[in-house]
Length: 285
Image (spheres, rainbow, N blue to C red):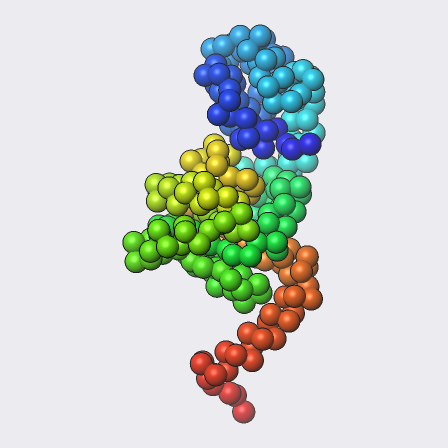
């Protein structure tokens, strides 16, 4: 069964406004749910105990206790990582060792992302990439760097990967080439760009699958994603979050290599042979 966060993402658009208030609390403050009964959660969200229980049913749980127990188990697993984050959440001013401070903070967020990564969702993401006949990677502004790297790397290990570059590309042509065997990998981090959502929605309408890499289940790309992988990053993502995102992408590419090893090895060999014709490299003696 999907985690509660994934269940909320999938069902969010079907929830009532009152249920959405409770769902948002579960995502933002899971400790409150772990510690308090449904009556208190209803009070904290300005709703009611009945609303909380109905939300549990809407998400596929047998009741509030089942949801609460799952959250408690997840929190037990993440406890050590949360403490590490708190240790490095102070302001950088006054820090004498900037190297240690920033690298330890990167490590803390990478660990938080690792702990929250749903193995089932990760495996689905790998399978989507391996099975896709065509891959289109989309990412603008703060997402442009990781999107460019992933498109380039997947072209080496898999091929048939395209980076959508916005206005300098023909979006209409790319969309006409999309079908049920295509996969769009969409990066969406604050500040979220509308073009990413518009392109992804158009591709989904043509039958493509959407793999979202984002910071929140309820980010704009969340509702249309078939699979969502969440990266926990400090704010602002463009300045402080790249270490976490690239670490996650490295794991994703490694998963593809492991799942499709024979084809990847053949692809890399062909790539190395052909690249010599176009890009001569300096040879050291």
